[in-house]
Length: 121
Image 1 (cartoon, rainbow, N blue to C red):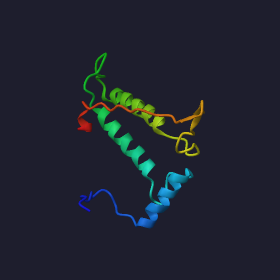
Image 2 (cartoon, rainbow, N blue to C red):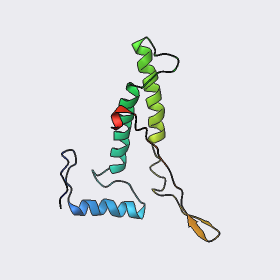
Image 3 (cartoon, helix red, strand yellow):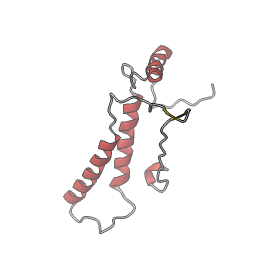
């Protein structure tokens, strides 16, 4: 097919991928057996965010001199971000369409990533 293999990504049998896809499409679950793409993505995001905030471009108000305080600040910030990344597993996987004047609209989300971060290059 002309697609390079990625060593970190394990191959899966097509029936397992089909079962996962059916659960996504029906909106009943975001995982199947050991296939957990949503939680894998969330964990990867948390790891990359933590790496990024460990080495910020600058500190406003000065960098904490004590390593214990520095670690506590980074951990508190990382914990706050992790809390926001957690999704309610019982919530619908896609937003319910809203009918306004006969037109179906869905919620849209925009995410802007900071390209200047060294871990995003």
